[in-house]
Length: 308
Image (cartoon, rainbow, N blue to C red):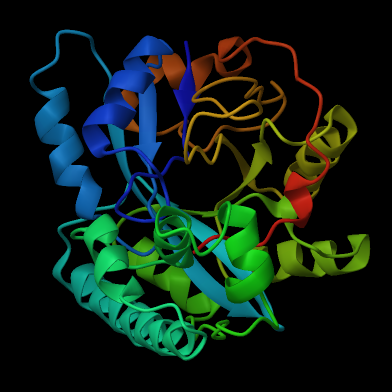
């Protein structure tokens, strides 16, 4: 059985529509998929409606990836199996959306001062009903020939310290966990092995997350070397956090694919162990899920900042 609890659509910084993402999940023979766009649940209803027209079974887990700030670092918290229709949750997401919108407008102004005109409208078109991210600006810049590729957009304009960078105004980790719990979901520390943190500071982050009421952490990711994955599993066990596995899928690539190379060690408790939505067979046999070898790591990935 195959499960992937971290994926994105074009409603945040992914490249695929919800329909395209689901079809790819079918092709990869997934049994359950969490859609976790940045600070928006706009893709969920569309994904569920499309899945209902399909013959192949796939459990869609409503999710989100909330952006937070902690000691100057951008830390992402996944909300899994959330009640996306909760009124308070929607109100809070509107607050986060307003912060993203304000940031997007300032980025557009800075790009205009750099001679890059008419970028905002195209970025908004890419975002659709979702929030405008730096990835949308990067796509437009490539499309218009301002830069050669995504990396160029961040190196020259959008990355930290560059001419069009705007520091985000995100919520705290504590707030994110509270939002998720109030929406009846589980709070998961996303890709802890990829933050630019020393071992000491990573431990501080995990301890802080646990003490704030966090439920689990991602221990499996296709970009992590085997020893790094073992370290994440050790942290999860040490701090009594449930284990999650996700590809952080944005687009097809050499190192990233839905549901591939996501092995949760059998001594850990999977984050989905008590979810009715994906059936008890997932809860009692975590060692049977995604039983594949870990691929070689892409060492550069851990140094890349979020595209959001």
